[in-house]
Length: 384
Image 1 (spheres, helix red, strand yellow):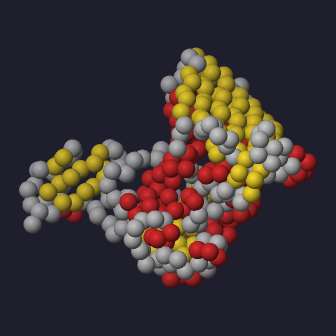
Image 2 (cartoon, rainbow, N blue to C red):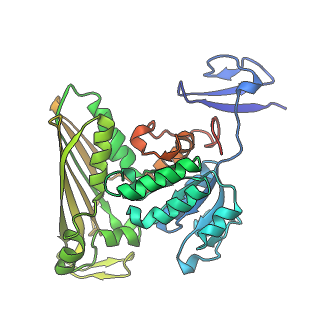
Image 3 (cartoon, rainbow, N blue to C red):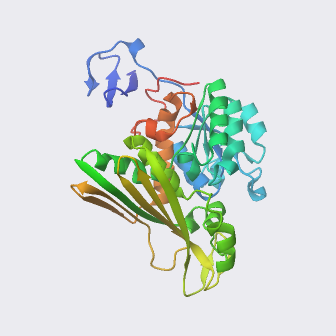
């Protein structure tokens, strides 16, 4: 019987298929390797922390990319005890019951990685990161602040960094912004002779992400409540705040100053919100626009805006970035599928996460997310 082993050569970025019964029959093989030089690990064992709207997409993507789902956590009482496969609509049982008892899940399974898809601020996801680190489980989160939390949640991030190093695991944050607000922009910068200014604007429908994101955008609040709970609380970072810091870190820029402005958005008609569970009346906020301006000592200015709201009929996602200088370059992504792109980016990052140094290790220090043509464990060089 033919034996095929697949190896992903990370250094050369090549995939190789070798039939060991017929040496030399390799596809894009850099050379004939002995059987010992090929690596085929067991499946990557993953805990899904958060099984709501996005968590269900994660569960399907993990299953289709060859991960072994060994735990599922969610605080929604309606999901307690339900099989993760059925909740995700996989058409099959995974024999993994969803539970709110995170401690029981981590203590009962030998997981390699955990995807945390629950909240948007580090104060909210700190307990999830902490329990993963205590059990030596690599963890990556959709939490927007975790994309680059070193200044906005300095104490929390440094404590988690130390804890992860003590238990030899890696913690990080990723998602849609990793590619479309991050590496896409720095790739354009790499083709630019002189940069004077970077501008970015992205909009998304908070209805697609769940209650946590809708609330942090002020959806459903009166103008007075928005001013009191959102606008006055200027110390809470908008998503572009952390993105600007991520961009400056990867581009080697030193930040001189940062400021942000949060502006409520409204619609002239009532909008039904399935996520909030009620109708947003005309005159109530449907979400907000956050504009972040970053000045650097190198003279480059970053002005970025994210627009998150409950969409009115006909509104769609947008993503546009411009690098101004010599030459000027603008790239527009029309109607990006932000939920799917968020989930795919994080799933594709799991092998990179596992192979990254221990600690809280943000993604601007990692290679860009890569498409996984084979099951994600193929060619993995490091597995806990």
